Image (cartoon, rainbow, N blue to C red; front, top):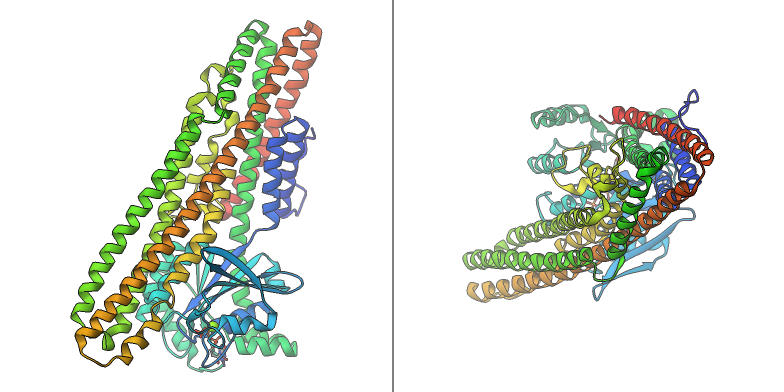
Amino acid sequence: MEGSGPAHPAGESPAVATRRFVTAGIETCTALDRSDLARRLRHALARLDETSTVLYVAGEYKQGKSMLVNALVGSEVCPVDDDLSTTTVTWLHHHEPATAHIRRRSDGEAVVDPIKFEEIRHYASEQGNRENRLGIDIVDVGLPSPVLAAGLTVVDSPGAGALQAGSGEAALSFLPYADALILVSDASAELTVQELAFLRRALEICPHVLVVLTKIDLYREWPRIAEMDRAHLSSLGVERDVLPVSSALRVEAVRRSDPSMNDESGFPDLLAAIRTSVLNDTRNRTASRALSETSESYGRLLAALRAEREALANPESAERLLNELNQARQRLASLRRSGARWTTILGDGITDLNQEIDRHLKTSIRVMLEHSDARFGAIDPAVEWDAAGQDLQVSVAEMGRDVFDRVRSGTEALIDRVTTELSEAGLSAPAIETADGTDLGSLWGSSDRSLVAEKAKPLGTGLGALRGTSSGVVLMGVMANLAGVAIATPVAISVGLLFGAKHVIDERKRNVERRRQQARAIVRDYLSHAQTEMAVESRRAVQEAHRLLRDSFSEQISGLNGALAGSIRTIEETLAASDRERAQRTAVVSDQIERLEQLLRATESQRSQIGEVLS
Ligand SMILES: Nc1nc2c(ncn2[C@@H]2O[C@H](COP(=O)(O)OP(=O)(O)OP(=O)(O)O)[C@@H](O)[C@H]2O)c(=O)[nH]1
Ligand SMILES: [Mg+2]
């Protein structure tokens, strides 16, 4: 075991320092035969490298979102057009060579099809995919780009007409999974009431919101508009700069390699804002999490070593300790059997969660149906279909968000219940408590959960956990997997499904009662489709959560079993040892404890430095 870690080489960046601390943790755990802890830290180390910060670009139609995205990544990937609108969500991440895929659902199954790079335009815009008739969830693009290589995933979104319509809700559904939002509004006019309302809600959900004023080359009046926008933001209680840019100038500046034109484009300031307020923040969170996992591993190692030292110091109590360890191991064995209580709790919890969500879905749909029946009974659908249809989409998107929120909070509650059951079943057996109050049960490390509470931002919902503050292999894995489904579903369901219907109604120019009947039938169909889709997707998410939780808990129980077996062996050796051997071993163990304490202190100090940056 190397005592690396404490000394801070001059000029070392926090990222490099973090890697060094986590690597020291891996070496220490390996040297002390805790490969389970080492494996977990290796995951933490890998996450440091693959940090991906999701930047979601949203705004009204034709404000210049796609062109901004292209200018950011330095490639004409997203379709930019005066007439043809973007119709799908497009993710761009770093990949060499460039790749493109479409992600969609076919008979409820997630399907990923490769497409040609030149075809992105076809799938992502009205050119080949009006109103997203192809039912694409996401166009997934990988391309080499220095900006993306810095760990950024940029998301171009369809224009959200008047932002409060279904598509605005879709954007809001996505935001819990984004690290930052860029609200794009062009310099032709000040921020609208709808844009401000959208911003107000986005600020509650997303930790970083940047407001970008586009097309400043086109509108000479832009400084006045920027001033008005700042005043609007300030009236929302948000002291935030508005970043003026011209994507057209940026593209031209890059083509001509013209630095002064580049400055004029506003992109250097935009990129600096992304780097300082968004990227660094995500990196710090990931680093902070990796460091706390490292500290936690030290805590577990220390608990085991302190118990051993105690046994060495009091051979008469070692016998008792051995006894208790063996009992703990038996209890553990019962947890590993199939049909153990925790598996029943988990299984029942999953069944309850599915039922609760089904019930909730049914009720929500019924309420929506009653409401829209009444509404369509009072209007002429040929005239007011658009407004009523949009409202319905908003309600469905909101319901989608709510359903996946329930899946998430239900899963979190279940993690809590199973963890409590496991600790009550003997994993924190007080009898194993050692002289200094550390208990071997802490090997179980329920402190995982305390980290979940350590949210950096008052996000309102626990979804913030996904953004990197939560620890615990369990929660991260499960929640990250749920995210994929939860992103795609409400977005897919809420956008565009009702559009086609209007034509049907328009064509029938008979009496109004007949049109109302048609409208009601369309709405019933739509809602029943939405209900089925949500039910399938939420069940899939819950099922996936079940599998992940079961595997993750089983793995942790096995890891603990290995650790207990190691402790038992050590104490048996202690009991069999001569006085001289015992003295030697005590010296070694004391030395290890001292080093571990040093490492733990250094790691914690590094973490608190990062914490200060965060606060
Ligand atoms: N002069 C100038 N034109 C711009 C700029 N940004 C966008 N445009 C033009 O504005 C129009 C719309 O741009 P897009 O990037 O397609 O806008 P969008 O917000 O993605 O549009 P939708 O996806 O359809 O909502 C295009 O004709 C662009 O060429 C800019 O910085 N300067
Ligand atoms: Mg676009």
